[in-house]
Image (cartoon, rainbow, N blue to C red; front, side):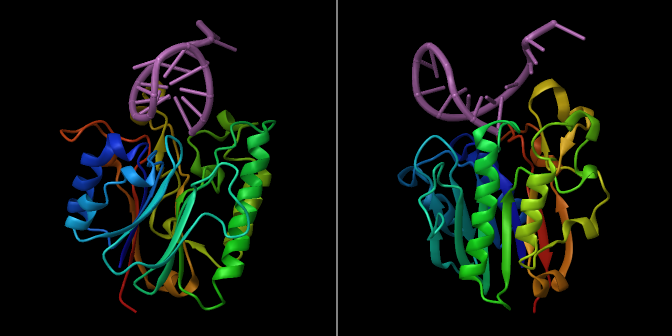
Length: 259
DNA sequence: ATGGTGGCCCGGCCA
């Protein structure tokens, strides 16, 4: 089973790139973030024609997440069950091929002194609560998405440049660790050298200068981690091509052998 | 030297 996650920075703008990427890389399950669409605008038919069922959770111009699956898609949950999302449409979950999959778009946080930073920490806490409440021990779980947290100092191009910034602060790393402490493994690190990034700022030619961050993660439960045969970032998707401009994020993939 | 780019949708927000 091939799992993938990709923050597409507008599915409207990126649809040709997304369909091209699916054709080329054949994910079984694909988590999308920042579709920036209402549910009514989501191109369900396009993906259905390609053999994918979808669950989308979006209400307009901000955020928006989706799950695409060609191995079944059932028991869809949109948003957190416990509370109305204050800045919503950041999580959708479904069971795909026997795995409880979550597509997440963790709040950015903006800056350490911003109220949205507190919201980011609270959101990660709610994610842990959702796992506790909906995934009994032994459940096969995958959480893929844009976490807006770099787990390690080696996940940013220059730790000194990030001092005092979001994405690297101790509290948000601790909040991410709390999610992982449910029993989730960042298997990407087993297959890739430190300094392998998934996001590069559009500004300043950062992609070409190698100034990136790894903030897009696919976290999996131990049974899936044991089945992992590889994981990679598709840097080609960060480059402009005939199908249009790129997102500022590149897709991340995890491959699992059959159970 | 307080920028830069891109997407929302058309002045400003958000990343």
